[in-house]
View 1 (spheres, rainbow, N blue to C red):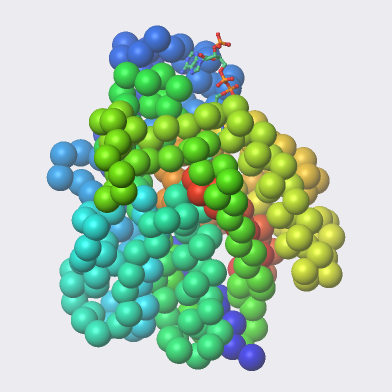
View 2: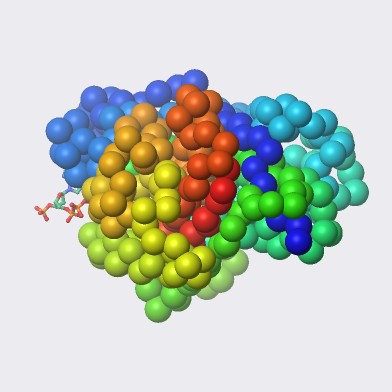
Length: 321
Ligand code: UT7
């Protein structure tokens, strides 16, 4: 059997930081409300000229070096992003050009929103398990600041920009133990971004992310809880077998509920949202990279990754690091 294991990770955050106090001057909100309801204190915002591509490149270079590889060793690039450089060429193709590794398959996964990284990881896992590629670069990169209505206090306080990357490599032991993906289009209106070539939309609907936060919150807690049960049952494990939770960073209250479900103390949860906000598909690889760099996560630890977002789409990955 061939498995996909994590060989290296990397992350990139723009230099500019926007605090809750900065937001108090922009919309009718308070630092206290944002911290109490979300756990977020600050987030990074891309500079003019910084894009999903430029941030993906930074994170990718770090992850490739961390894996002890050269760019030419990469056999597949998947970029998860809802804020791509262009409709096409894909951000992944543009990144491939920058890495000067023409020839390998490269594509974006931009339809799974905040669950994009888990979806991309699951796809790359299949390529490696099938012995189609040896090393895959899986990236989540987002400039959420460009799709926010900065007059809408219910959304603009939540998100941030950044990129995280993972290099997966073939191994004869896991690695990625299992991935579990789900979607439910009946809740398509709970979280959406209208940009596209469908029927014409009003400007606000077309250009800005729209969210029914409270509804999404309840759906996330229920579906992710069920997903943990599914993931553990598929592997004949119970919750005591999980060493670390690497959650999507949407809301500290969702993260706390998920930690409780796994019976994990918050010290065993990779949390970055206080400093980064919700970076959509970048949030999991960024949190993973930080916890590895801080030497919290050790080789052999069993990790539960989970994410939930627009679609609705959600998924988990159980990984032996
Ligand atoms: O990444 C994809 C997955 N994302 C998620 O899963 C996000 C899930 N949702 C959430 O994290 C939370 O629902 C939010 C943080 C978005 C909102 O928290 P909430 O506790 O659900 O608040 P709410 O939407 O029910 O709003 C409560 C009140 C409202 O006022 P009234 O109607 O009670 O008078 C809002 O108008 O808070 C008000 N409010 C604000 N007040 C100050 C909403 N946004 C703000 C704000 N500052 N920024």
